[in-house]
Length: 239
Ligand SMILES: NC(=O)c1ccc[n+]([C@@H]2O[C@H](COP(=O)([O-])OP(=O)(O)OC[C@H]3O[C@@H](n4cnc5c(N)ncnc54)[C@H](OP(=O)(O)O)[C@@H]3O)[C@@H](O)[C@H]2O)c1
Image (cartoon, rainbow, N blue to C red):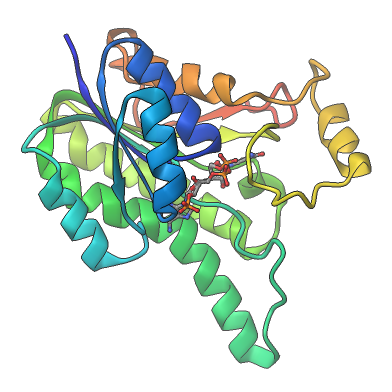
């Protein structure tokens, strides 16, 4: 059966790979992002529907929900990134506050707003997948804190939506190459260190996250909910 899939941040990187994976299976896919030009290019390339939307803006998210039809099967919250990268923090406590709010907005509240706005559209058997980060384990920054909060929120969301036949999970990627996450600022030394921290000696690829997301939305994953799935080549292990 063809499903209807919403991918926030679907114009590039992991979101684009996720959108391509569902589209390849014949699903109807909607992608969102702030950069309307890039979103339109991706949409043309993948044969998916673009809806420009800043996931941190309640008005734009409400409009997105209105533009979507009444039904949805899969929501993938990929929109986000480390808002500290390439930006000088302003002075004093005001600067600290602004920097923390930016990361909480971009990574935590974006997913909360989008999911809340479309929750009523999700049909039984549906799935919510949100993209966290290994930074929740190791980065003692506002970015890491925002991603850690996503895990707590996902657990609560799972208990809320479970009785409706929906699942909610968090995918926590390690370092994934070939996205715009690092804004061209990743040094070779740091990249080598990130790869060396894995057990399989390679960087993650957007496809690794796309396939895991696709699995979580599949029939075989209906009893997996409220979980954080780590996709990092062993860079962070769990018990
Ligand atoms: N790459 C990694 O190593 C890595 C590791 C762990 C976790 N992650 C997470 O993976 C997710 C995807 O990142 P990526 O690596 O694929 O980087 P990316 O290529 O920069 O993708 C991020 C996407 O999110 C969109 N976006 C950002 N803020 C948005 C907002 N407020 N509203 C709507 N869309 C927004 C961006 O589009 P616009 O700029 O057009 O809005 C962009 O398409 C992020 O949540 C990131 O934190 C990445």
